[in-house]
Each structure stands twice: as C-alpha cells, then as structure tokens.
Amino acid sequence: MKIKKLTQQSKLKLYRAIKNPDLQTVKRYTTKGRQWVNNSVDLELYPEGSYEIDDKYFDRDGQYKFDASTCQKDDFKHAKIIYTQLSDLTAADANDSRFWTRLTHDHFHNYVRERWYTKQIANNTNTKTINQILDRSHFFGNGQRARVNNAVSRLWWVAHLTVRFDEANEDTKWELTKAAFKYQENTSSLLQRNMGAYDNIRFGFLEFFVENVADLTSVKVQKIGTALNNYGGGNILPLLTKTEVKEILLKIKQDL
Image (tube, rainbow, N blue to C red; front, side, top):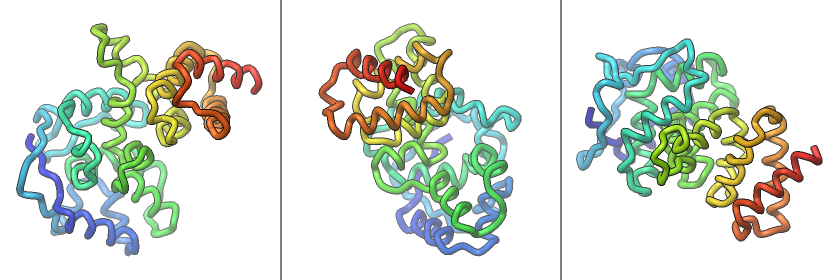
C-alpha cells in the first residue's frame, strides 16, 4: 500500500479541531471505523512522494491489522513490523508530523484507538482526554518526546534507537528493542529524555536492564531513570563509556 502524507493545512485543521473540541470530535478518536473519511473530514494529501507498507498488514478497509486481545502487550511485535517496512525513512521523513498524523488518523486509526484510548480515556472534552489524544494521534516538534509519544512514530523511533544493526542473529539484533517495550518506564524514563539521544547512555541503560531484569520492577526502572537523569545534571553523561554508564546504574540500583 502506498501512503501519502497530509498537507500542512490538513494537519493543522485536525490539530485545531482537537485543541478546542466538541464531543463529536472526541468521539471520532474513540469510535472504531474510518471516522474522518466516513464523516467527510478532508484529509488532504500532499501530492508528491509516498511511503509503502505491504498490503498484507492491512484489512479490506485499509486498516492496520492487530489482535485486539493482546494489543496492549504487542508493542515490540508492531515496532518490528513498522520499522522493517519503513526502514528506508530518512531522518527528515521520520520527523515529518504530516506523515505520522496521516497514519494515526487513517490507516492506523483502529489500532491507536484500541492501544491508547479504549481503556484509558472516556468520551469527554476534559484536559486529560485532550492531552492523551494530542500525544498519541498528533506529532509536535522534532525532539525525543514527540517521537516516542505519537502512537505510530514511537514504534518506528524506539526500534530505530535500539536495534543492533550489525547483528546477524535476529534475537540479538532486536533484544534491546524488546527490552525497551518491556515496561512503559523504559521509554518514558530514558527515550523521552535528552540523555536517551546518546548511544552510550541508551545502550548502556537497556543492556543493564536486560542483565538485571529479574530484579527490576517498573517502579524501580522509573526511579533508576530519574536518578541517572539527576546524576547527569552534575556530570557529563555523553562523555562516559557504555561500561561506565552501566557501573553508575548498578550503584543507583544498589542504593534504592
């Protein structure tokens, strides 16, 4: 399937509608089906260029296929699919909000609804609901937070930041990507922060997690991530080796 990105005007129209929404707008995000197309909302497409994902990953309505019963736990599975299918994205493409907003509002609408809205927000226009929709269906800026918040871009970006490209063995190649999705705190504590942009910190943190996973709960991961970030306030983390980062993490864990 060839997929075009939205025009800037169309993307901003969707954003303005949810920034000051009526209940009907919210329901388009929380209701199954092709809500924008079926309700005559204009998803104007940029005429030049397109991206391609194999048709086998979509149903007859053009919606991305997923198992609703395991959707909450299948982030790694979907990340591997999306990253493999879109492995040729340039940095500019991967930071293009028009592309990710097209996917969340069209071909991945049902997936986003099931993964992030069905069990987490109600049909109302309160601040919590609107912020959740802005985080998961829209994409703002080109920083770490925007990349790993949007419901589809996060799948691509977490894989991009964690896959071991030089590994031939599939399990080893994807080991840290799988670890990143083990707990939500692995993305929020590491990849949403600036320190997650550095290879030595990112790979050190995730390798430490894999090596100590039996002793780590989601709460401990969150505390360790916060402590490492605080440590970075008085030290230059990017200049440390991966081994030095892991030694710091071990000390933090022992002090919890």
